[in-house]
Amino acid sequence: MNILIVGGTGTIGTKLVESLSKKDHHIVLLSRNPKKYSKKFDENVSLVDWNTNNSDLLKDINIVIKLSGESVMQIWTKKIKKKIKSSRIDITKDLKNFLEMNHIKPQMLINASAVGFYARKDAVYRESVDEFSPNGDTFLADVCKLNEESCDIFTKEGIRVVNLRIGVVLTKEFYNLVRFFPHIGAKNHFFPWIHIDDVVGFIEFSMTHNIKGPFNLVSPNPITHQDFNSIVIPVYFLRNIIPMTEMLEYGYKTIPKRTLESGYQFKCIDLKDAVASFKK
Ligand SMILES: NC(=O)c1ccc[n+]([C@@H]2O[C@H](COP(=O)([O-])OP(=O)(O)OC[C@H]3O[C@@H](n4cnc5c(N)ncnc54)[C@H](OP(=O)(O)O)[C@@H]3O)[C@@H](O)[C@H]2O)c1
Image (cartoon, rainbow, N blue to C red):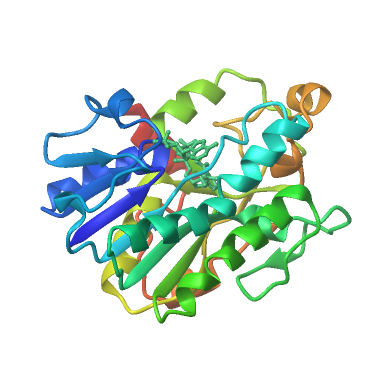
C-alpha cells in the first residue's frame, strides 16, 4: 500500500514506520522539518514538507495516517494549549488542502485521538467507559472531541475514517524513564495503558479490515495506579508543578469494546508481559 503519515516522526510513527517498511509498503512522511529526520529512517522511507506540490512520491497514496500533535508533556501555558489544539484540529484542514494540492484521494484516514476523550472532572472512576460513552468536560476531552470531529470533512467525502482513542503508550524508552520514580499515583484511578506493539498492530489491522469510527486503544486488562507497581508515574510531583495531570488523574476504567469486537487480537494484555518485553 502507499501510505502518507503526518506526524510520523514521533514515538508512535517511528515504530509504525519500522513495522510497515518491513512489509514492503511505500511510505511517505509529511513533516514540518524533513531534513531533521532524514537519517532517522530507512532509505525506502521518503520525507516531504508541507509545501510539496505534485511530487511523484505522492502518486497513488491510498492511506493517510494522522499522528500529529504538539506534545502534552510540557507546561500548559496559553500558548502551548493553543498549539496542542491546532496541531490536532486545525491541521486536519491543512492536511485536506495538502492532499487536494497533490491530487491525493485516499480511501482511508487513520486519526490519532486519545482516551482523554472521556475525562470528566466529577467522574466516579470505578465506572467504566467504552466507545459508546459520551465525551468528558476537561481541556483534553474537548481537544479529542474536536480532533475527531475535524475529520468529518473526510467522512463526508466517503473516506473511511478510523479514530484511535489511544491510552498511555508504553515503550521501552518510556518504561526506562518512569521506572525510577516512586509509586505515588492516585491509587484507585485507572491507568489506561497500551503496549506500543498493539498501537502499531491495530493500525495495521485497521488498514486491511473494513472498520470505521472510534476504537479505544488500551489493554483489555485495566489496572489501577495501585496495581501499577512496576512502572510508575510521578503524579504528585507533576500535580504540584504542572497543570497537565488531568491525563493521569482522571483515569477511567476504559474498555476497548469496539476494538475487541473488531476481531483484533491484542499482542500484550498483561502489564507484566509488557514490562518483560522492555527488559529484553
Ligand atoms: N504516545 C502516547 O502515549 C499517546 C497517547 C494518546 C494519544 N497519543 C496521540 O497520538 C499522536 C502521536 O503520538 P506520539 O507519541 O507519536 O507523538 P510525538 O512523539 O510527540 O510526535 C508527534 C509528531 O507530531 C508533529 N508535531 C509536533 N508538534 C507539532 C505542532 N505544533 N504542529 C504540527 N505538528 C506537530 C511532529 O512531527 P514533525 O516534527 O515531523 O512535523 C511529531 O513528530 C499524538 O496526536 C498524540 O496526542 C499519543
